[in-house]
Image 1 (cartoon, rainbow, N blue to C red):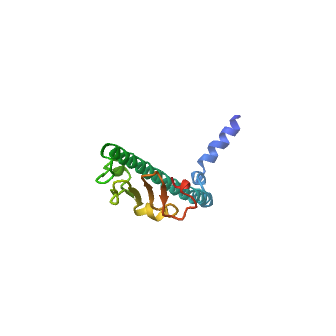
Image 2 (image 1 turned 90 degrees about the vertical axis):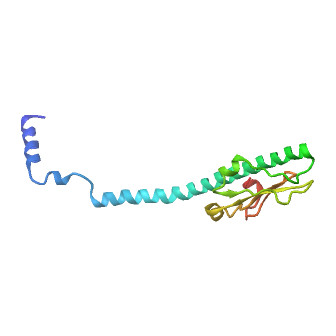
Image 3 (image 1 turned 90 degrees about the horizontal axis):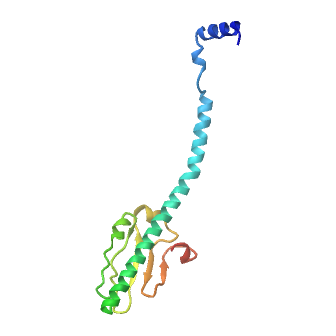
Length: 151
C-alpha cells in the first residue's frame, strides 16, 4: 500500500455516512431467520419423538423392576397376593407414567401396568399403556403393530 492509497482510505473514512454502510441488510437478516425457522421445524418434532421414547423406556424399565420385586416376593411367600412394590423408579417416572400397585394380584398371577400421564399420553398413542404379567408377557394398549416396538 503506498502513501496515496493510505490517504484515500483516510479520506473515505472521514466522509459522512461511511459507518452507516456497515452491517446486515434486512433481507440478509430475514434469510437467516427463515433458515433458523426451517431447521427448528425439522428438529423440534424429532426432539419430541425422542423424549417420548426415552420416557417410555424408563417406564418399561420400572415395570421390569416391579416384576422382579413381585418374583422375589413370590419366592419368599409363595403368593403374589399382598405384594406392593414401592420402588424409587416410580417417583422418577411419575411425571410421565403412573405405575399403580397390582390390585388384581392373586396367589398365582399378577399384572403390572404403566399408564401414560399428561403430555406423554397425548404424544404416545402408538404404545399407550404398557403391561407385564407373571409369565413375562408384555402388552400394550396402543395402535402399534407389535409389542417389540414399544418395549
